[in-house]
Every structure is written in C-alpha cells, then in structure tokens.
Length: 88
Image (cartoon, rainbow, N blue to C red):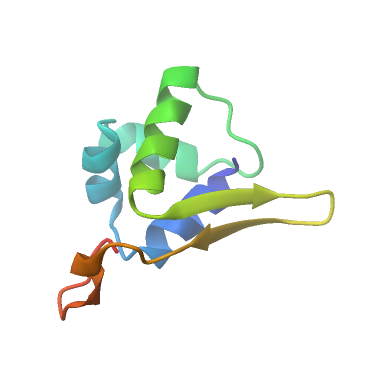
C-alpha cells in the first residue's frame, strides 16, 4: 500500500482526513503523515491493519502488479444509493 493509494482511496470515497482517521481509529496526524509518503508506506502493522479494515468496510481494495498500483471500490451497501452517499 502506498501513500498515493491511500490518498486516492480517501478522496474517491469523499472523505476528509479527519473522517478517515475516525473510521480507522487512528490520529489525524498519522493519516496526514502516511498520505505525505511517496511510495510504499512504512508503518506499524497495527496501523496498516486499521487502514485496511476501514477501507475494506467502505468496499475499497488496493491492487498492485509489476506494471501499476491502483485502488478499486465497489458499492455494495444499500445505504450508499441515497442522496447522502458520503463515504460510500
């Protein structure tokens, strides 16, 4: 997982950094620091798991291949279809 992927996933889900921090149960400063990283993030495993879990709950997966890295998401929650789709 790269800093760019984390930033892209957060923006794609229309979350600000504070909301991602809340969902991942991490500090806002941790999210800011991680998103400033260019390339693979070097963080504690508990921090990485918290981010994966938060994004997974939003239907986000991270992809990497020898050619490229990316972010993919799905809308599987019925609550994501209404007029207020923040975080879906």
